[in-house]
Length: 111
Length: 172
Image 1 (cartoon, rainbow over the protein chains, first blue to last red):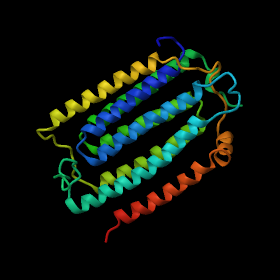
Image 2: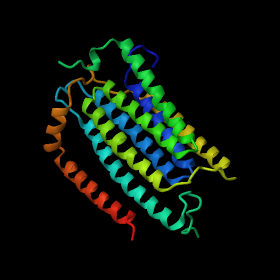
Image 3: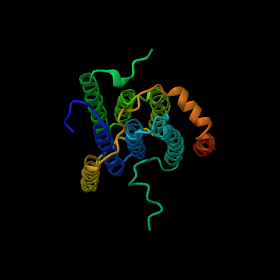
């Protein structure tokens, strides 16, 4: 790293940083929607990594147009959308019952 | 004839990458540290937009547009609606927050350091010429031939997820 041309390692480093920021948010936020936002950031970090691998990794014979990484990223987006929808529906239902979405107050199942 | 990123001057590519990466990381940092939920969501929108720009740098033209349409245009709107429907939730600090944020920060930094070490020291088998073609037609072709099973299952997952979300969030 440190050359003028941007290569695979630049994108992988960015992806790692985004993933770790998202992980910090998911572990430390008190609002449940905030936790979901941090999870979306983690998923985006992984998406960047997938697309970077698709562009830069391969063998000399990979003349065939291989887009597996980008397809992975599209399917990750689809699953992230479904997961965000269901997660937010659960949060809204919990708010209706308990009037709070702070994760430390939602401890009914704690022993 | 579209210009693809590999034919651009490396200096311009480097400037674009560093600007977009800085915006993405700063947006992420602001998102995890803001107490106001709306500001948090809007800074994540900024991050997702700059990630769409990074996809353009990575020659993923279709994916960049899909990122804006799906992530920024749908998922973040959904998050903003949820923030609207759960009002009054400004994150006031409690006494255990300091310890929790400390441990979370430690875990995140540790994981980041280890991952960065692995990423920069692995001998990746790089292609001699990075991929640089238009992707939309080929993505459609792959989705209906090699990847038809994940494609169909993804539509099932989305349908089931949306019906489930409707049932859970319904007023009754």
